[in-house]
Image (tube, rainbow over the protein chains, first blue to last red):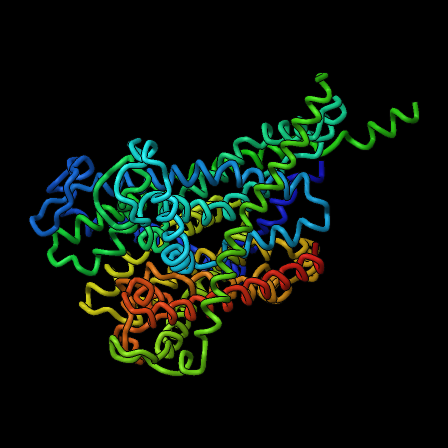
Length: 333
Length: 281
């Protein structure tokens, strides 16, 4: 067997890889590449170092405490944790189905000539800086939501999720802007995932007489891990999003189920209070929030990458279509 | 209704829903662009581009300090992020499959996913705390940290587009691996790598969060690297949350300018990548 991975490896790892200029090249570029790993490690280390004071003083109580009052030295971060999770989950609930719809449309349904320009447009949406979303949110979206809140019938306003004064800024505005920001990102990744699903899946479904929807369902089922990965990647984005959220959520550290209540998120409290942290404990408490944000996004991202990779690797093992020799052989017979 | 008409109806409904979701996603894009054009273009004038901010409360003045500040920050970031990113990407592409290269790629992906505000904390602890002063250097460092993984990953992707036969040809002629990589593979992918750098620049040019407590922003014109420096994004933020009508107008103009720059860079990068794909793919 000449072809195959083994052969390639033997060419790649020639003797000169261990000595001479090639070894130098490998070591020099490898040293620079190591910097990337060191950088990731250094971020984790610095966050741990700076937050030690708060971790030691409060322990787990930090994340169950409900009151955030830096003046009196009381640091409970649960309102921020709640706000981050609530806004990101709401955004994911809205953005998820839409992102999948876009991915399906662009990879399965759109006429050939439409695909490129449409995917490019959604990519442009992803390129808009978050401060611009925030600006738009403050001056366009928030007034719109305020109108919606004041126009809502009294009977609905009695429900806990619609309670509170109609101020415009709050959880709903934050979730809406996050959904808008996450859609292009998740749909782009999901589109790539669907493209990686082998054509044989579609062909088999159509050959069995499936309608378009049934065939696409088969494709989605085959690519389910990757699609979930794409959505998780968007979720990770939403968790760490700072500027747009801090501008529209109201920055009030009080957890509430209400969509209309001004709330706060982990990223937003960092943006707002970090430069004001006068004493070491306050700073450590804020850095601890950053540390947890770092760990959570890391885990979410790693998980989504693993899901996407596992799908891509799985697809490669399946041969693209029936082997051509077999087809021609059958014809000859 | 027969079973087959129902199946066909479900299918048509599903297709329509997918098409609708594309339209649904493009509505915000259209709205944002509309408001940027409506409110931004009017305010984008000579004085905005070439004047510094007036004292608080006075109308007029512009973003000149912020535009220059952003350019300085991008320059500082590129200075160390471009070489590190390109070489790390070259390493991963060249030794792809080795365990260490996979680890580097994983670290780059992880860095890519770190929220930008957390990168800001890191830069604060490394570049602000020891000297007890916000500075352009700290801001450039924060942006550079964000740039490295983007450049490393795009460089790797684009080097992969270069056909294996080119490298094999060079190796067959007796070139060492380093010679083949530097003189054959890298030049073939160079246009793509340059545009990858542009994409990274476009990404960090729009970053606000990592600058809040590193570069900090500055109401005055400054190019000193050891002092706080203004940035387009930070100034848009301060102006947007301020109570002054005139500042809001200028924030829109700044946002318009920012989006134009980001779009031009994205379109240019897209066109160049497509050319590269057509050349080698």
